[in-house]
Amino acid sequence: MISIKIVERLLGILMIFCILVATLIVSFGGLLYLLQNGGEYIPIELINANPQQTTLADVWRVAFSFTPIGIIQLGLLCLIATQIIRVVMLFGYYALIRDYYFTGICGFVLFVLLYSFIWRS
Image (tube, rainbow, N blue to C red; front, side):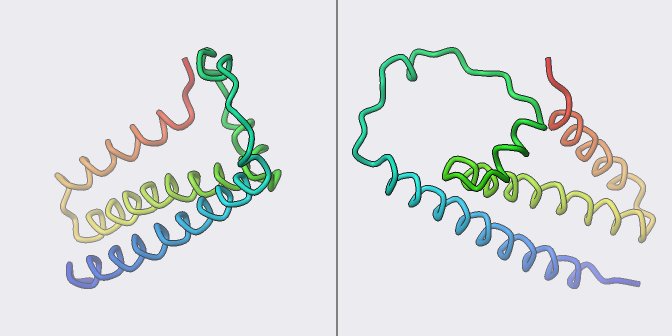
C-alpha cells in the first residue's frame, strides 16, 4: 500500500517541477516577444476589441508554431496540464486505497476540468 506521505512528496515534486518548467517557457516567450515588439505601441482597437472565441485546435496550432505568442501559450498549456495531472494522480491514489468519497470528488473535479477545457459555448 502506498502511504499518503509518498503521494504528498510525489505531488509536491511534480508541482514544483511543472510550475518551474511552465514559468521558464512563459518567461522565454515573453522575452522573445519583448525583443521583437518591445518598442511598439498597443493600438487602441486591440484594447477595445471583443475577445475571440478560439477552439482547442487553434490553441494547439499557435502553441506549437514557436512564435513568441505560441511559446507563451505553450507554457500556459503546461500550467493547465499540471493541474489535470495532479487531479488524475489523486483520483488514482484514492481509487487505489478505496476511499470512494474522495475518489468521487476527484472524479467530479476531473470531469469539470476536462469538460470546461473541451466544451465551447
